[in-house]
Length: 192
Image (cartoon, rainbow, N blue to C red; front, side, top):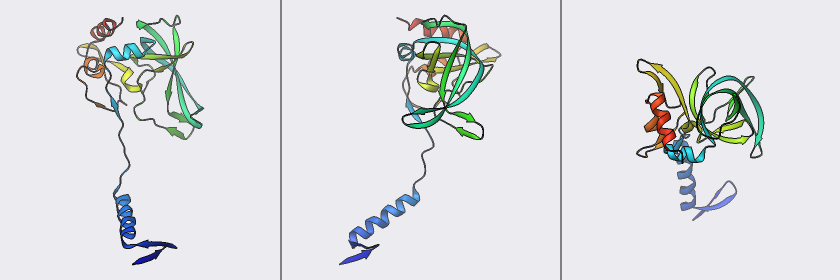
């Protein structure tokens, strides 16, 4: 027996399918987490133009068109403290571009993007975009803030690091919690 539903002819099975989809839609919740495949130190070094120890000194956010849509991109000017691996930028400061930020009352958050803090020193893996202009390789996986504790200068995982698909020996597993000098030695050992 066919029934009329919103001007469409539908049998009982079709009506039950529509109702089932409606109930599934009511129970659905938005996904709130990002998951990424964990990279090794060697993979980060290979994908990067440079690995630098740097400190954020200034930032500004701008609107840019990416993939046909307007997005906020934050440009952070950083002071180069030390070249760890790769190409020397031959400048005391470079600019890092990260997705998201705030312009006036509008803010955009990009899950998994590296969070750069002004005045904070970090070990950062960089990909060259243009002369003296970089992005953070592998987003939050390529950025390790340096924190001071009783043991001295220690690397921490980025605050925006997404859940990582486990990989024994990943960069995060090997670098976060290590002393700065020991971590830099691990990264330099991967340079070929």
